[in-house]
Amino acid sequence: MEQPLKICHLYPDILNLYGDRGNVLCLSRRLEWRHIPVEVDRVCVGEPLKAADYDLFFIGGGQDFDQEVLLPDLFSGKDKELKAAIEDGKTVLAICGGYQMLGQYYKTWDGKQIDFTGALNFYTEGVKKRMIGNYVFTFDDKPGVNIIGFENHSGKTYLQNGVRPMGKVLKGYGNNGEDGTEGVRYKNVYGTYSHGCLLPKNPTVADAILSAALERKTGHGTLPPLPDHFEKQAHDTMEKRLLG
Ligand code: GLN
Image (cartoon, rainbow, N blue to C red):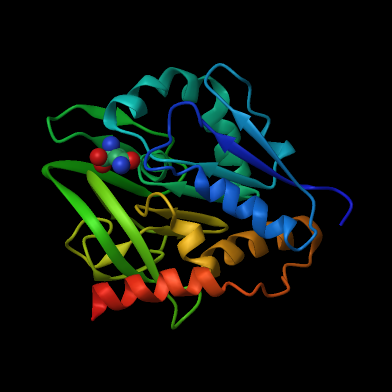
């Protein structure tokens, strides 16, 4: 592949809780280890987003305050760019606060309504008691694979028509602690509450995301396997600890 896979890290200046940006490092390394060229651009508040330039978008998590602060910038055009990219089949990984931003709105636990992009059909409503902890959920794209994650949110997300969850919660809260769903899938969008080292601990998810982006860009999404010895150990240790 001559042209590099282009990753856009959106709002790295504001949305980066628990080292969410490590996911971008993980995606880049897994491409480099396979000698696939990659380029990462950071697009911060105040900088224009030309979504057509990118193959893959990453949006990290942020607190209610951070999500609110960037609204004027989001609605100065980035929302439309993002929506068009999603409909065009571009790949997106969005975590927690970034995931919520893809939905219709977020009503905070104290009643403030923040309208979001409405790129995907779901909404989020906050409750006072936060949902915190290590958790496990199935990855429905790859039956038999469980995802190990860490969640910390007050928002309860409710998926509506036209989107599906990323998986089913086996331990923990997930989208809302009520309906057993976790995350969202739509076209090549992956949204999840799982913070921090989601991809290093879950190489299957990392490769699913890279495959989707490469397939869309080149028509060839098959990736040669990597050894993933340490990654699997980290994953399996935590899975055993949580599921027994
Ligand atoms: N502010 C959101 C919530 O608490 C997102 C938090 C986060 O990204 N950890 O639901």
